[in-house]
Image (cartoon, rainbow, N blue to C red; front, side):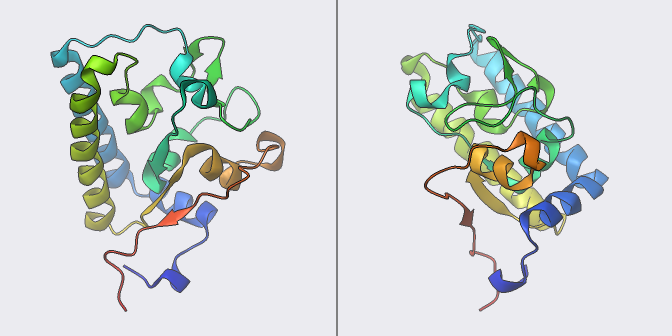
Length: 174
């Protein structure tokens, strides 16, 4: 993995991920297996859209650069607003097939919180390993901040005030 100073800018990193068809296919496979785990657990989405209103539900959604690359294959349905997913239209997700891992395993029922956390950690570790295996940059950031940095100016009008942007340096040379 390149040194931090040699990491590509975020839009370039997204482009690298999107150009790697084998990586994208492996990411879709990980998503499929995460969806299967949720189905086997018997969890169902209420489809009321509360989880897309991060500020109301008091949570934050994080995604890797590969997850963002897949998500932005289609533009959001609304402009980016702090604390909200721009792929939400009324209570529905317009990016359901491309949504990040956090969306796939998060459910409003607190009785499943421990299971949800374990599933997220398991599949996120797999997604992290896919970045290494396919030699694509790995960045992990808050979703709306990442989208603000890669979407065209007309779709990213509101910036994240805290600038959350994390770079994993675990596999970088010193």
